[in-house]
Amino acid sequence: MTEPVLRMLAEQLPTWLPTQRWFGGKDRPVTEARPVRVITLSDKDPRLVHALVEVVQDDRKSVYQLLLGSRAQPPEHLNGVWVDSEGTHWYEATADPEAMTFLLDAMAGQDSTGPISFHREDDVELDEGLRGRAVTSEQSNTSLIYGQQYILKLFRKLSAGPNPDLRIHRALHSVGCEHIAQPLGWIADDDGDQPTLGMLQQFLADAADGWAMATASVRDLMAEGDLHADEVGGDFAGEAHRLGAAVAAVHADLARALESRPIEPGELDAAIDAMHRRLDSVMAAVPELAAMQGAVHEVFEQARGTADSGVPIQHVHGDLHLGQVLRTVHGWVLIDFEGEPAAPVSERLAPRSPLRDVAGMLRSFDYAAHQLLVGQPEDHQLAVRAQEWTSRNRSAFCDGYAEVSPNGDPRAHGVLLRALELDKAVYEVAYEQANRPDWLQIPLTSIARIAS
Ligand SMILES: Nc1ncnc2c1ncn2[C@@H]1O[C@H](COP(=O)(O)OP(=O)(O)O)[C@@H](O)[C@H]1O
Ligand SMILES: O=P(O)(O)O[C@H]1O[C@H](CO)[C@@H](O[C@H]2O[C@H](CO)[C@@H](O)[C@H](O)[C@H]2O)[C@H](O)[C@H]1O
Image 1 (cartoon, rainbow, N blue to C red):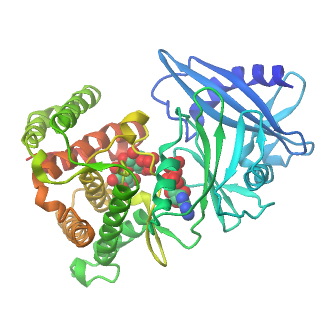
Image 2 (image 1 turned 120 degrees about the horizontal axis):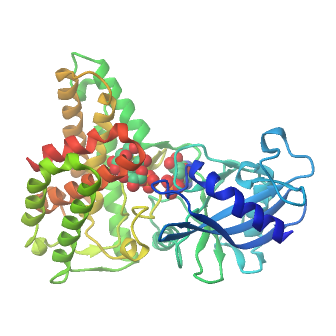
Image 3 (image 1 turned 135 degrees about the vertical axis):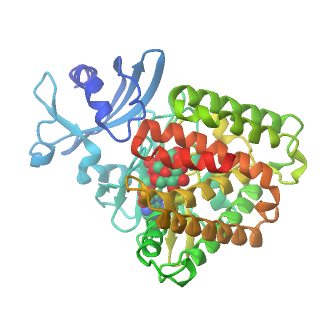
């Protein structure tokens, strides 16, 4: 079976991979896709095969994980996607809920197949036999929902060693953190770089995501021409306050569970040097930034010398925004502790200022308010409303954070916070340019405002 599948993948993947939402290399053509390992997980019907593929893009090489399925009688939507030289039809198996049952059952049974091992947490029993349907929301990986109980994230682009998302969830669970979904199991690869292949968590079936809630609130305000944010039914400030408190609680738990220490001489300088470098490299790709370059560099420089601000460095979320928080009936939950997808794992696991996450969330309030104006004719009234919503919710978030954080009010570190916000906005310029060029104006406008 192996040879024909290897050949089929090598032929098909260079054109197929860039069509997948989770493929993170759309900025360059795929020169070559080399299947480096193919393992049969299940010989039953549906058959399930695990493949590791090295994707070559000029001098960049990344390893991606794929699952292939095959059935004697495939349903129409899975039929004839790829055919190997022996005439076997294969398809992307995460689209086949029945094939995905294998992964849950293997975690429940703590099985292994060659170097791939399936685990469940010690204190956990898993229901078996559930079908796994793929989440349809925008995401960088592929998640499967089993019944109303579990969600399994299959990491697509693999990195060496334990995945930060799994590592941080387990650490937070060990100290009883109330603002995460419980980690339930994982899939490991014990070969080579020993990447984590998947992470199983409690599925929060009743949850609404923060981005959907916040943008609904902005829409309400925009629709009520005569009312202020605090008078509109969909006011978000109470939620923003609770969210601030939840983020501060998670930071305190992270500090307890993992390292937290005073910032050492030179570390802030290194962080500021990295901000300057990021700005220069993003500017090379987005010339619109040029007009603001001087002002932004200046804000970064002002943050030098604020190391004695008293805020220790620690593990942080790393890419916190309203799409990474879920509101359940019990409160806010933070998800996806992987950090910025493009950053190296060593950087994502390094201790950093918790103010980075605060800055990320402050940016997100700005986004939520301004995305409704994208593509609309200029309307001064709506722009004022967007600004009113942003200020109100940013303040509420900081108030909630300050009430719980041992580090106090983030606004007391205004110079550093401003630099961190600008750094995040510069990152967003690159992100929007590569992913949603229509939204590029949102971070560009913010940069002009913050730096002025
Ligand atoms: N524990 C959970 N319960 C309910 N929904 C979840 C849970 N974890 C993630 N999700 C949903 O799945 C989506 C993708 O999850 P995320 O961890 O952000 O994936 P990615 O790293 O691929 O971006 C989220 O936007 C959220 O809607
Ligand atoms: O969710 P991911 O980990 O994939 O994060 C990436 O994509 C985000 C968008 O989906 C992006 O976030 C930016 O857009 C959000 C609205 O869609 C906004 O709330 C954030 O503030 C803004 O940064 C994120 O930056 C990127 O890493």
